[in-house]
Image (tube, rainbow, N blue to C red; front, side, top):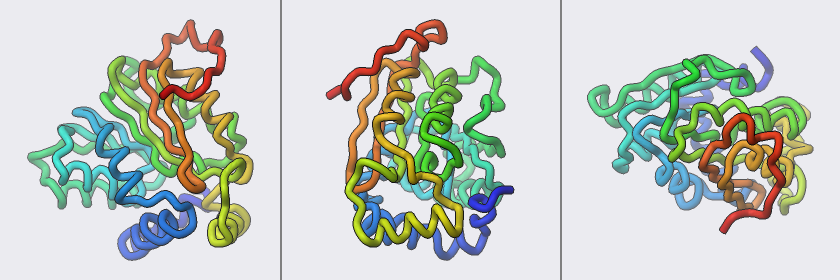
Length: 240
Protein backbone atom coordinates (compact mmCIF):
# COMPACT_ATOMS: atom_id res chain seq x y z
CA UNK A 1 0.00 0.00 0.00
CA UNK A 2 1.46 3.37 -1.01
CA UNK A 3 1.88 6.31 1.34
CA UNK A 4 -1.20 8.15 0.13
CA UNK A 5 -3.54 5.20 0.58
CA UNK A 6 -2.10 4.39 4.01
CA UNK A 7 -3.29 7.79 5.25
CA UNK A 8 -6.92 6.75 4.96
CA UNK A 9 -7.27 5.17 8.38
CA UNK A 10 -10.69 4.49 9.93
CA UNK A 11 -10.03 7.28 12.47
CA UNK A 12 -9.22 9.87 9.78
CA UNK A 13 -12.20 8.87 7.65
CA UNK A 14 -14.64 8.95 10.54
CA UNK A 15 -13.55 12.04 12.46
CA UNK A 16 -11.45 14.25 10.23
CA UNK A 17 -11.85 13.77 6.45
CA UNK A 18 -15.18 15.49 5.83
CA UNK A 19 -14.35 18.48 8.00
CA UNK A 20 -10.89 19.07 6.57
CA UNK A 21 -11.31 18.03 2.94
CA UNK A 22 -14.94 18.80 2.17
CA UNK A 23 -15.31 21.97 4.22
CA UNK A 24 -12.00 23.68 5.09
CA UNK A 25 -10.01 22.68 1.99
CA UNK A 26 -12.74 23.03 -0.61
CA UNK A 27 -14.01 26.34 0.73
CA UNK A 28 -10.83 28.13 1.74
CA UNK A 29 -7.92 26.51 -0.12
CA UNK A 30 -9.29 25.22 -3.43
CA UNK A 31 -12.18 27.74 -3.60
CA UNK A 32 -14.63 25.18 -4.98
CA UNK A 33 -17.29 24.62 -2.30
CA UNK A 34 -18.68 21.17 -1.65
CA UNK A 35 -22.38 21.75 -0.98
CA UNK A 36 -23.07 24.43 -3.60
CA UNK A 37 -20.83 23.30 -6.47
CA UNK A 38 -19.48 19.76 -6.25
CA UNK A 39 -22.44 17.99 -4.66
CA UNK A 40 -24.95 19.36 -7.21
CA UNK A 41 -22.68 18.12 -10.03
CA UNK A 42 -22.59 14.62 -8.52
CA UNK A 43 -26.30 14.60 -7.69
CA UNK A 44 -27.44 15.65 -11.15
CA UNK A 45 -25.32 12.95 -12.80
CA UNK A 46 -26.16 9.96 -10.60
CA UNK A 47 -27.97 7.33 -12.65
CA UNK A 48 -29.74 4.10 -11.87
CA UNK A 49 -26.48 2.12 -12.03
CA UNK A 50 -23.55 4.18 -10.76
CA UNK A 51 -19.79 3.59 -10.47
CA UNK A 52 -17.96 5.77 -7.94
CA UNK A 53 -14.17 5.62 -8.22
CA UNK A 54 -12.07 7.07 -5.40
CA UNK A 55 -14.79 7.04 -2.79
CA UNK A 56 -13.45 9.01 0.20
CA UNK A 57 -16.05 8.71 2.95
CA UNK A 58 -19.10 8.33 0.72
CA UNK A 59 -20.31 11.88 1.32
CA UNK A 60 -21.41 12.49 -2.28
CA UNK A 61 -23.37 9.29 -3.00
CA UNK A 62 -24.95 9.23 0.47
CA UNK A 63 -26.12 12.84 0.19
CA UNK A 64 -27.36 12.31 -3.37
CA UNK A 65 -29.29 9.17 -2.47
CA UNK A 66 -30.85 10.90 0.53
CA UNK A 67 -31.90 13.75 -1.77
CA UNK A 68 -33.74 11.31 -4.03
CA UNK A 69 -31.26 10.23 -6.71
CA UNK A 70 -32.82 7.37 -8.71
CA UNK A 71 -29.91 5.00 -8.15
CA UNK A 72 -30.69 1.39 -7.30
CA UNK A 73 -27.19 -0.08 -7.67
CA UNK A 74 -23.88 1.58 -6.81
CA UNK A 75 -20.44 0.08 -7.27
CA UNK A 76 -17.63 1.54 -5.17
CA UNK A 77 -14.07 1.15 -6.47
CA UNK A 78 -10.98 2.19 -4.55
CA UNK A 79 -7.52 0.97 -3.54
CA UNK A 80 -8.31 1.64 0.12
CA UNK A 81 -10.37 -1.05 1.90
CA UNK A 82 -10.93 1.42 4.75
CA UNK A 83 -12.53 3.95 2.40
CA UNK A 84 -14.69 1.28 0.81
CA UNK A 85 -15.91 0.06 4.20
CA UNK A 86 -16.63 3.58 5.45
CA UNK A 87 -18.50 4.50 2.28
CA UNK A 88 -20.61 1.35 2.15
CA UNK A 89 -21.54 1.78 5.81
CA UNK A 90 -22.47 5.43 5.30
CA UNK A 91 -24.69 4.70 2.31
CA UNK A 92 -26.51 1.85 4.02
CA UNK A 93 -26.99 3.86 7.19
CA UNK A 94 -28.38 6.74 5.11
CA UNK A 95 -30.89 4.95 2.85
CA UNK A 96 -30.95 1.29 3.94
CA UNK A 97 -30.24 -1.97 2.14
CA UNK A 98 -33.70 -2.06 0.57
CA UNK A 99 -33.14 1.19 -1.31
CA UNK A 100 -29.84 0.47 -3.05
CA UNK A 101 -27.53 -2.44 -3.77
CA UNK A 102 -23.91 -1.66 -2.87
CA UNK A 103 -20.93 -3.47 -4.40
CA UNK A 104 -17.34 -2.83 -3.31
CA UNK A 105 -14.23 -3.47 -5.40
CA UNK A 106 -10.57 -3.06 -4.42
CA UNK A 107 -8.82 -2.10 -7.65
CA UNK A 108 -6.77 0.52 -9.46
CA UNK A 109 -8.50 2.90 -11.86
CA UNK A 110 -5.41 2.87 -14.09
CA UNK A 111 -5.77 -0.81 -14.90
CA UNK A 112 -8.59 -2.54 -16.82
CA UNK A 113 -11.54 -2.59 -14.45
CA UNK A 114 -12.43 -6.02 -13.01
CA UNK A 115 -15.83 -6.20 -14.70
CA UNK A 116 -17.16 -8.17 -17.61
CA UNK A 117 -16.52 -6.19 -20.79
CA UNK A 118 -20.27 -5.89 -21.32
CA UNK A 119 -20.83 -4.22 -17.93
CA UNK A 120 -22.13 -0.68 -18.40
CA UNK A 121 -22.98 2.05 -15.91
CA UNK A 122 -25.45 4.88 -16.38
CA UNK A 123 -23.08 7.21 -14.55
CA UNK A 124 -19.46 7.21 -13.37
CA UNK A 125 -17.85 9.64 -10.92
CA UNK A 126 -14.18 10.37 -10.22
CA UNK A 127 -14.22 13.12 -7.60
CA UNK A 128 -10.86 14.33 -6.24
CA UNK A 129 -9.07 11.28 -7.58
CA UNK A 130 -6.72 12.44 -10.36
CA UNK A 131 -4.67 14.72 -8.10
CA UNK A 132 -4.03 11.77 -5.77
CA UNK A 133 -2.69 9.52 -8.51
CA UNK A 134 1.08 9.21 -8.99
CA UNK A 135 2.37 9.92 -12.49
CA UNK A 136 2.33 12.55 -15.18
CA UNK A 137 -0.93 14.05 -16.46
CA UNK A 138 -0.57 11.92 -19.59
CA UNK A 139 -0.26 8.77 -17.48
CA UNK A 140 -3.27 9.74 -15.39
CA UNK A 141 -5.37 10.14 -18.53
CA UNK A 142 -5.32 6.36 -18.82
CA UNK A 143 -8.20 6.52 -16.33
CA UNK A 144 -10.41 7.87 -19.12
CA UNK A 145 -9.31 5.04 -21.41
CA UNK A 146 -10.20 2.56 -18.66
CA UNK A 147 -13.66 3.85 -17.75
CA UNK A 148 -14.85 4.62 -21.30
CA UNK A 149 -15.85 1.03 -22.21
CA UNK A 150 -18.02 0.81 -19.09
CA UNK A 151 -20.06 3.97 -19.61
CA UNK A 152 -23.45 3.44 -21.22
CA UNK A 153 -24.05 5.17 -24.56
CA UNK A 154 -26.44 7.62 -22.89
CA UNK A 155 -24.45 7.78 -19.64
CA UNK A 156 -22.33 10.53 -18.12
CA UNK A 157 -18.88 10.69 -16.55
CA UNK A 158 -18.39 13.48 -13.99
CA UNK A 159 -15.35 14.44 -11.98
CA UNK A 160 -13.31 17.03 -10.14
CA UNK A 161 -9.61 17.42 -9.45
CA UNK A 162 -7.26 19.97 -7.89
CA UNK A 163 -4.86 21.30 -10.52
CA UNK A 164 -1.26 22.32 -9.94
CA UNK A 165 -0.75 24.52 -12.99
CA UNK A 166 -2.66 27.17 -14.90
CA UNK A 167 -5.06 28.11 -12.08
CA UNK A 168 -5.06 30.74 -9.33
CA UNK A 169 -3.50 29.34 -6.16
CA UNK A 170 -3.93 31.23 -2.90
CA UNK A 171 -1.44 31.09 -0.04
CA UNK A 172 -3.33 28.37 1.83
CA UNK A 173 -3.74 26.25 -1.28
CA UNK A 174 -0.05 26.60 -2.11
CA UNK A 175 1.01 25.68 1.40
CA UNK A 176 -1.25 22.64 1.51
CA UNK A 177 -0.31 21.50 -1.97
CA UNK A 178 3.40 21.71 -1.17
CA UNK A 179 2.88 19.68 1.99
CA UNK A 180 0.71 17.06 0.31
CA UNK A 181 3.07 16.63 -2.65
CA UNK A 182 6.35 16.66 -0.74
CA UNK A 183 5.58 15.38 2.75
CA UNK A 184 2.49 13.19 3.04
CA UNK A 185 2.60 12.14 -0.65
CA UNK A 186 -1.19 12.21 -0.73
CA UNK A 187 -1.10 14.56 -3.76
CA UNK A 188 0.82 14.16 -7.02
CA UNK A 189 -0.50 17.15 -8.93
CA UNK A 190 2.33 19.67 -9.35
CA UNK A 191 2.27 19.11 -13.15
CA UNK A 192 -1.49 18.62 -13.54
CA UNK A 193 -3.16 21.01 -15.97
CA UNK A 194 -6.53 21.35 -17.63
CA UNK A 195 -5.33 21.10 -21.24
CA UNK A 196 -3.89 17.61 -20.88
CA UNK A 197 -6.92 16.27 -19.01
CA UNK A 198 -9.18 17.81 -21.65
CA UNK A 199 -7.20 16.01 -24.33
CA UNK A 200 -7.56 12.69 -22.52
CA UNK A 201 -11.29 13.22 -22.12
CA UNK A 202 -11.87 14.19 -25.76
CA UNK A 203 -9.89 11.21 -26.96
CA UNK A 204 -12.46 8.98 -25.27
CA UNK A 205 -15.74 10.91 -25.37
CA UNK A 206 -17.52 12.84 -28.10
CA UNK A 207 -19.04 15.43 -25.78
CA UNK A 208 -16.86 17.05 -23.12
CA UNK A 209 -17.58 20.06 -20.94
CA UNK A 210 -14.92 21.23 -18.49
CA UNK A 211 -14.46 24.36 -16.46
CA UNK A 212 -12.43 25.85 -13.62
CA UNK A 213 -13.60 27.05 -10.25
CA UNK A 214 -10.82 28.24 -7.97
CA UNK A 215 -8.05 25.66 -8.22
CA UNK A 216 -10.40 22.85 -9.25
CA UNK A 217 -11.18 21.46 -12.68
CA UNK A 218 -14.72 20.11 -13.01
CA UNK A 219 -15.83 18.05 -16.00
CA UNK A 220 -18.65 16.15 -17.63
CA UNK A 221 -18.26 13.74 -20.53
CA UNK A 222 -20.81 11.87 -22.63
CA UNK A 223 -21.00 9.59 -25.68
CA UNK A 224 -18.07 7.18 -25.30
CA UNK A 225 -16.17 6.76 -28.54
CA UNK A 226 -15.79 3.46 -30.32
CA UNK A 227 -12.32 1.95 -29.95
CA UNK A 228 -11.43 2.31 -33.63
CA UNK A 229 -12.27 6.04 -33.55
CA UNK A 230 -10.04 7.02 -30.63
CA UNK A 231 -6.72 7.44 -32.46
CA UNK A 232 -8.26 9.83 -34.97
CA UNK A 233 -9.56 12.36 -32.49
CA UNK A 234 -8.59 16.00 -33.03
CA UNK A 235 -8.82 18.15 -29.83
CA UNK A 236 -11.65 20.70 -29.86
CA UNK A 237 -12.60 23.66 -27.73
CA UNK A 238 -14.96 23.09 -24.80
CA UNK A 239 -18.57 22.48 -25.66
CA UNK A 240 -21.13 24.95 -24.38
